[in-house]
Image (cartoon, rainbow over all chains, first blue to last red; front, side):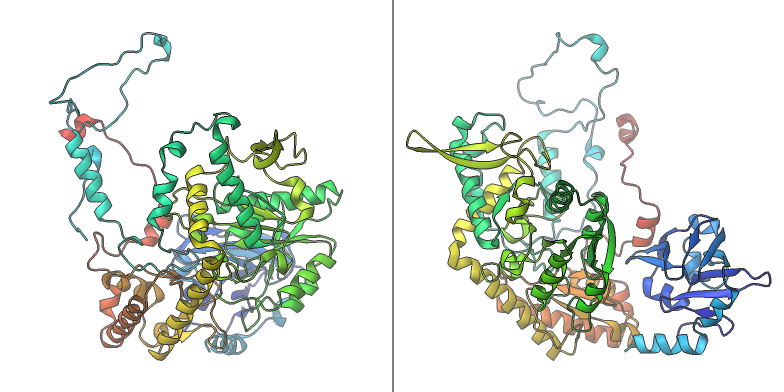
Length: 131
Length: 499
């Protein structure tokens, strides 16, 4: 069973989002996503100061099985990326919710995060996809 | 299979050892080359006897896991039998010794074969013209999309910047679109494996340059709404590109031209039988509809009447001034084109339809037998074309074994693994293409092997995890290979190797 922390928000395309104390959000891919993709070999992150709208492709994760797009969960500006992933893409497999974070964004509308799925809804989504 | 470790040819090297140890020696000198152009150090070449070299390469050839020795159901690759007649006729001395720069007058026989091949391919695909120039499928794709671009440019239609590609497509499709300066837009597949026509309708528009489709698709099913798709894209002013990877399924049955495609590429090395795999020479001719004909890559073989005689000649820039140009120094891979020509003659019109008949019959038989053996199909409600997809999602959940574990274990049972993890939209999948070449006995043996592996998975999954056991190398670390890719053989000075 995949780990789906209660305190995070989720997208249909399997990104997780955490709102930080300063109003910024941290984004990564879920434990379920990393399980499906398998061992990561390369991660392409967005540029800082780049602006994305919700649902826009902004990063690529490449595993031994496939290369997949990562979509911006919200509309906003990228303010930081996890440089460590360049040399250690496996971190996303080992620790997807903590040291395996991918980038941080400053949302245009702080309320947008609340519209994303909660843990319960995301658990239902992955259960459905399992059939 | 011989499982002994085979050293590199460089490891056999001994200083001064040459082929002519026991025979007359002559030394070549190059007095006319200026000293400044001569290299200072000799090249790092292996110094071996003829016997060493023969044994080394014979041993390597014995390690081949190939269609000549094993069932090779590698989906989307059409690993069919290559009749030996194609090989021997393509290697007639007149073909082998023809210089690529020899005059048209001295190459009429060769040119007439290529002209006939162009005509055969036109006929079987329903296109208006064929250029044999692209040297492989990828170059054929490039030529095809470059022609779409040239067509829009010629019509001052530069706002068309998007190529539509279904999510089940071969990875080369979006890569080709990108190489030609287009943005790729993905079209989803519906639950039955067809292109989601409503989603397509929603994204076509004045920005659409064209769509790239494989039909039958990589899901191994024939897209039943192809006429609707063609109409939607054409009505928006876009063109239709046909990826010929799966042409084997419809050979002589359905023509891409009749489906409404404007340009297609064919993989002659797959459908028209040349030994392939391992990046060897291919041939990716393109066929075009009337409106794309002016943009064909050159050269193309033409035919005219001169002094009551048919004369074959090269069509060049002069004949096709709007051509996208040349793709190589000459025209395609001559040997592959000749093999395809002989193969087409061997089949004849009647044999071509039998290729499609038996390719689909074999795929459907194998799919039915594997279903009976308890395996899950990705699209059980659909009839397969020449290939089908089996999903091991349930085994991954229940026994913790993956498609890769099955693939590796199949090697121990004497079968090449099917294509794994493609198409990307089906989890834990094997894409299985038996081709028309295989007998019922071979297909039955494959089913038995799969059933035996399933039993092993239920008993002790570790057996699968450790596979293969009988190959020269055991399970490779594909993660390390991908993360630390290093394709360069670092030569040590010969003295080090010998020391």
